Image (cartoon, rainbow over all chains, first blue to last red; front, side):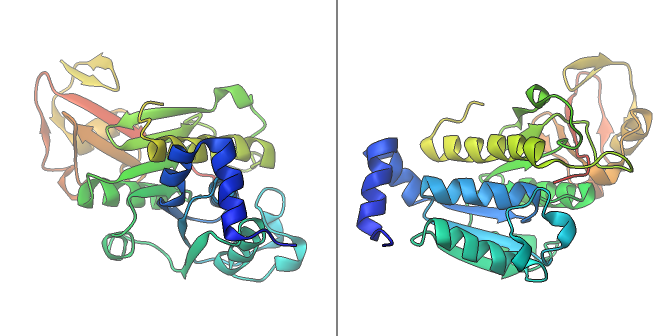
Length: 211
Length: 63
């Protein structure tokens, strides 16, 4: 039996507090990139009861993603936006998911992200990360952006932190561990970084702007 | 003297030249000068003055 919307809201409000849950349930968050970071972040936000998730990716699920991304083997070949929407709806049927199969760039970012107050950068390519963060900071100085940089390898999980690097720009990760030949991404450490990002997003929704 | 990410540095020039000195790839950073974001298109034209404070955020691959 799938719980009703009222039952799920009541359950969340009992655990998180009514005032906080109201804020979370009325929040809208953009998750840009649905790989190891974005798929885990989207799930954490849906579980917390975030009302609207605007999710974006241009790629399909690949066998090489299954070591760390929140997809199942039977979803290989499907667009990540479609696959994660199904997974999010299975967890929280009442989260409004707005999927877009799109590659974000300098030209389309201002239009595509104009309605999102909190933006999560969850790309893997460092130049795409820079383009998104710069575009938001230049076009929308009032919006919040939470990014990730440095979560590859099996280094200590304790080196991954959240830093407020600019007024409305938070950066999670160890800042240095990049993907290269022989240095890959592990679900465990990527999830630590994704957890930092999701947690900071929920703190912003709660009005707690310090890290 | 200027301040870059909280550290004092003796430097004169524009932002592109500073990124070269620090060996940062200009396509993988975000730069804030005195708490204002500097658009990438302005890196060459933005001369850094004595006393300026910069935050340079570097992105590495993986996600």
